[in-house]
Image (cartoon, rainbow, N blue to C red):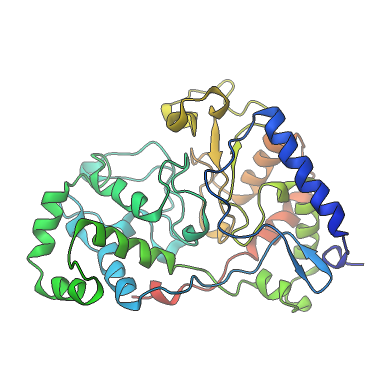
Length: 342
């Protein structure tokens, strides 16, 4: 019998969720999200309970604003020295990342935290590893003004954009207020909301194409659930809807130099229980986004799975389990969003 076909009583799931909430409140190991998750965690498909949902496109996106955001996402005028764009660190042809441990900003400045993928970012409860930006608009403003990223100022950026008659006309058509800082950020964020990787092989499996996955990939999904990975990586984004301590069942940071970026959510809340707590990343397109973790320390998906099992689950996985889980994770890569095509 295939694991995905096992029927679980709804009552059992409710009890499981309540138990999980109780554990979080008791342990203080995670910070409840400031807002409800963007998408539900569980759904019934027929009479089968699935903890992962197929992705669906974000609706009601103004195509004019999406197109403006796309232009700005690839516009070097947003950086102080015209050397960088948003796409420099979030290459849409490479899974929405740059493939570096730490991104390189203006003047060759190197950051201190791994750039997360911009793909499917609309489904996260907040943005950045520490969740300091509540919206994609807030997130978009950060790198533009960061002195070691794009290093620009808003007067500088807006002066450049104001000289572009075609761009100004586009904003006049898309926004009643025309070209403003707020509308620039909204356009970029609207474009980013369109970057949904639909129709992965796993989504097709969930929709009933049972032969689309190999036996090894199905085994990986089974182990992913049985081992407990699913407790943090579920919903349509397979993550992104909660915060969790990095090192629940082991001290990930012991015996290694640490930086301010390793403090995670603590930098935002200044609460001791948020030390080393991070937003759980989405696993959508994860096979494309190495290196992994906030510190970019795992250069392969195999290594990332081993580390997660060790420090989050207190388990040393057998090679077969690693192979199967990695095979399953590879099925989460969907189609390149239409809006991403230049």
